[in-house]
Length: 159
Image (cartoon, rainbow, N blue to C red; front, top):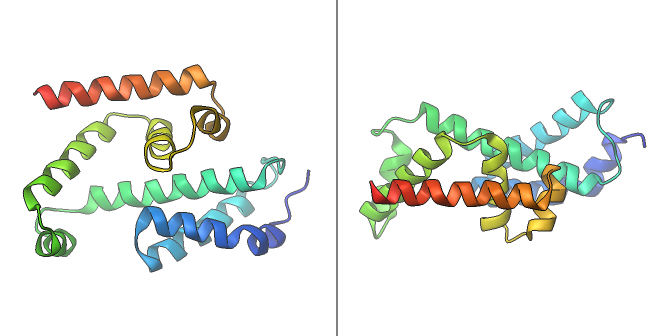
């Protein structure tokens, strides 16, 4: 099935933008991520199948947003303005900093697909079957990744 990027943009653009807004919590970053999603679609349209366009765009957008977050975390230093604004607006500064550090230590060791699986299952509330279909894995494979992730979280909590 041929991918009509212009039609996908009209039809699925709002869905992709909502997804990007929800993950990034920043309008400008979300708009950039939405555009990047469709750029990826243009770039790889000859290699992609258009059977499930909403699922395809949802997954591309999720991966792009996670990459944005990952890249920002790599560039950040403890003295940067974002951290200061978080500290200024947070009720529980210590808890938030600990949670951010724990997430960084957990996901720093994981594959990108495991991070995507965790976001879809734990944050988006998708079922194992839905996640498996989105990432192109079996349900047991998704279950195993989540089980491994949980065990690593427990290891880090014990340290």
